[in-house]
Structures are given as C-alpha cells and as structure tokens.
Image (cartoon, rainbow, N blue to C red; front, side):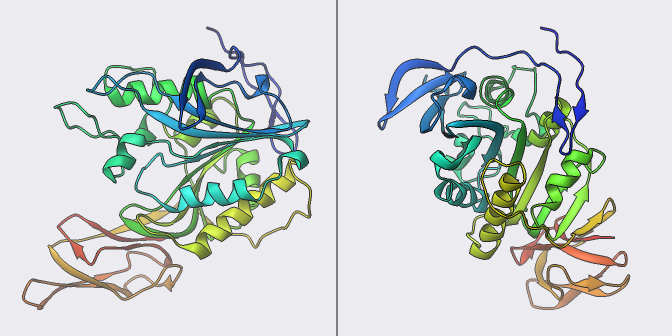
Length: 353
C-alpha cells in the first residue's frame, strides 16, 4: 500500500493529502456486557448524532485462546467537523488518564458536537489486569513490553507487537485529525506536563492550549504521539501527575485543557482561553541514586533550583545519612520520586533548564 506525501497547512496544520481509507467499521456479531464487538473502526461510517460504545477486539489471543477487548467510545456529532482521538492507559497503572477521559466524555453533549471524539478508555488490558505499566504476556515467557515504544510497529513476532500492530492499524491510525495520548510519570511524579514536538507548529499550538506547566520538546517515532505525527496528524503526550493514584486537581486541569482545545478547533462551542505559557525546554537532567535506601525529597514539583541546591537526602537501613543529592543545573524541578525507597540507579528526580 502506498501512502502519498503529506502536506501541512492551515492554522493548526490540517492534513490536506489523502491517506488510505479503512473499510467500514467491522462488527463480528459478538456482544459483551451489552456492547457490540468490532474488529475495525471507521468513525466516518458510523451514524451521526449518536454516542457509540464498542468493545474493540484486538488481533491475537492469550494462552487460554481468548481475545483482549478494549472499551471504546465514539461521540459523533450531527454536524461534520474535526476528528479527535483521546487515548488512556497505554501504560496501564497510570490512573489519572482513565478518569480524565471519563470526565471529558461526561461533559460532551453529542447533539452539540461538530465533529467526532473517539476515546480509547483502556488501551493496555493485560497490564491493567496485572496493575503494571507494561504489556504482560500470558504465556510462559514473561518478557513485558513497553507498548509506547512500538505503537506503530510492523513487526508481529511477539504477543505485544501483535497487540500494538492491531490497535494502530485497525483502531487508531485513520480515525483522527488530532490526537492526545494521556499518561502519568512512572515511577516518579509530574506536574501537568507535555512531551511534545515543537518542531511541528500545529503541535506546538495545540500543546499551549492545554495550560500545561512544562512542555518538553522532543521527537519520537514509536510512541503513540510520534506515530501520529509521522503520518501528519498533530499529537502530543499529556502527562498528568503520578501513577496508581487519583489526583483530582490535575485531572480537572487536563479536562479543562482538552475542552479548551476542542473549542479552538470548533468541535464544541465556547470561549477559547489563552493559558499562561508553560516552561518550554529541550534540556533535561536526571538525579539518580548511588546507593540503596530511604530517600527524603527536599524540593517540590516546579521549584526553581540553582546548580548545587540540595534536592534529596538518602538514609541506610539503620537510619544513617549516606548521601545528599544536589541539582545538576539551574532549572525547574519536574519529577520527584514517589516511593521513599530506592535502589542504586533509581531515578530520584529531574530538572529541566
């Protein structure tokens, strides 16, 4: 299959070239808990003016011969417009994204939409069941896989690769004009933070509409947002605090940012806010543990630090201080360890500058 060259244009880099089009949404006739099962999604083929809820059956089977099913909502307005993809749970134990997309869905009235919002509520089902970050194979070879390093893989040798390949090609790839992949820090904690590619003007603009505290400009080819940017669909990764917990203030800010973006592209009506610009940077330094033991942070997220400022103190099993860790640069604290215990090499925190 040949994909034509992409052309960016318009205020938010609207894709003007033609990509291969999926066949209509494919139903396999199954029902799970009252929801129809699909094996391929084409939002353009769905009835407008309705909220659709499906289980997407991922290709491949676990060691019991059963499939994995992803809960997917499609909110399709009566009027045509942009298509936005919201993804939660690529890293399965990151809780705030699940709650963010739920709250976005609650606040969208289908009859008022001019366009379509698709929500992948739970992306990494094996990881979610195991309450870990990665994809967990069910077979005897327990090599977990980071799905956000193979989002658009063409390799299908492993179970995780088959899982990623199916979701990208049959669920995500052709159903978005814009995409936001929602995460949290893991195992540290973030403020409201964006991994984003500022070399793409459309991505830079959409990131700024979310009101994040820090925007770290970087490029990727194998993450969900990088895969989308690679086919000309503006996308970025929104980091919402810490894993394993619910942080309502950060979730609410993420919801507000999402709705603000939807207003900007005229998918919903309302005044578009212009948030304060974030700290925007391409420079990052980690602070890592040299020993094992208990760690006490001496800084908070978004603190401004000078090179040499005290950031962490580490204690051994007897309570003796074994190490003080200092800032490697003048900058802003963007990550802090969640668990007070660390082993040698563990990330304790990060500074951007």
